[in-house]
Image (cartoon, rainbow, N blue to C red; front, top):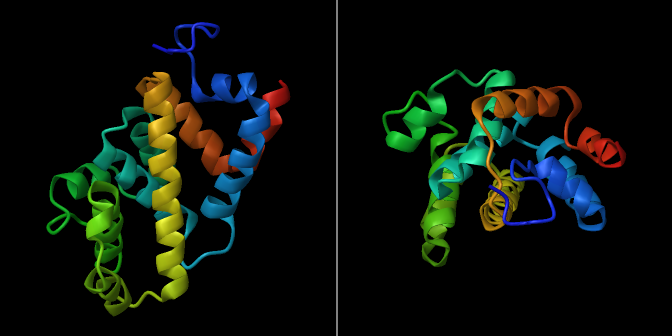
Length: 181
């Protein structure tokens, strides 16, 4: 239920973006940059990071949409739930486990991140660019989780599926074209 009384009760994030296009356009441009521009991580891996961060935060809207999007990019169904339950035993690529551990810790206890946490990412074969990219995805989705939760935005599984497919097929830049619709 949206806390924005000028919008319908069943408001989606796209409805909020349409109501506030001046802030939505640069935000969607940033999403496109962080989530789809060239990176050490594939689009699916970045969606996995986004869904994981959103799951750690308990943001059902973002976790649902980005889990579906990650799965649309080939992340196996159920992997995110397993990672959130027990990252160590989850069927996550061993190179990604320290990345997810890093963004999980950055989300839960950001002041406790240490050089050893970064070194674990590097030891898994990632470079500084990869760490930078993972931190940007983490930061962006901590922001989005706060925005969605703060505005009371919710979505069901059907909406998550539609949004996940739309994000896979058109990226975030396509969402900006929907602001004028």
